[in-house]
Image (cartoon, rainbow, N blue to C red; front, side):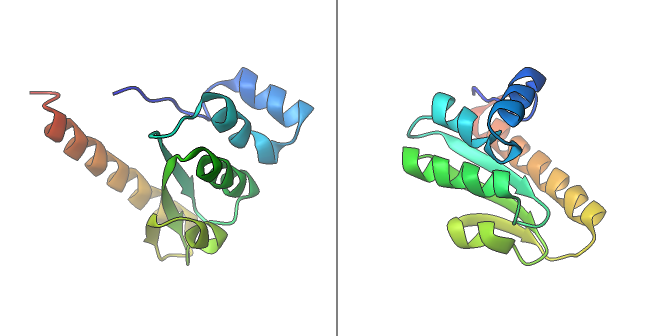
Length: 118
């Protein structure tokens, strides 16, 4: 299964943040790389990060499915997506630890479904 991390290419992040704004670092990549049928997975401890909100909106325009891992009460992002996992905690470290665990569980389930790692 092909995947890409929109936060791992420091050249793209620096270019977009400098030439546009940090709020655009994910939505610009989705605009150029994303296509209908893709899945965008967003992580935000608050659900209110402007760069995440813009990414969700761009994905919606392109017909990209979105799954959000959110914290606290889910913030603005929770109102924009159907598929979400909300860790109802105000402790950032706990939210991130649970997001990481859930992410690993999902990867294991997908690998099992497609017969990888056997």
